Length: 215
Image (cartoon, rainbow, N blue to C red):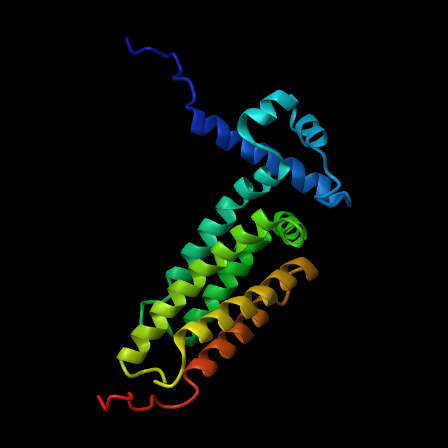
């Protein structure tokens, strides 16, 4: 007869459960009007139903909590963006607009967390650096896309992929962050479309010019 004894959860499983509980707790506290700066470890631990000692088994401090909790937000949003290619199955302008809309939808699941990250990044170098690294992934991916488009002759050869990618990612990131923090989302599709149009016509604004080497 097969044993019905349940296998103990792994350390990673326990951590994932705890992170989700703390994320829910922080979301609730921030929605009550508190800022992340005002929150104490004691408040977070008490609301999550754990002791301070248990908290410190998993996290160094509340900044470490913020960095850990942002993992899913960063990982999944990057996966959404990286899946889009101009000539892919869901490529083109319409596909790009849908991609922006999916990113907005994903960010809305983490509205309070995103606000906390922006708040703390203003004064904490670790959070600011982590967010810069996160945005850097989008920049690097977009540079690759643009270089591929230039080699294929579909994008103007005089555009600097590095500079253009930084402008698209950082500018678009600000718009997305403000849209999520400052609206109910009823016009997310319209904002996504405008972001896509700005990107698309900024990059494909004219027929591709001949490459400098004449090829």
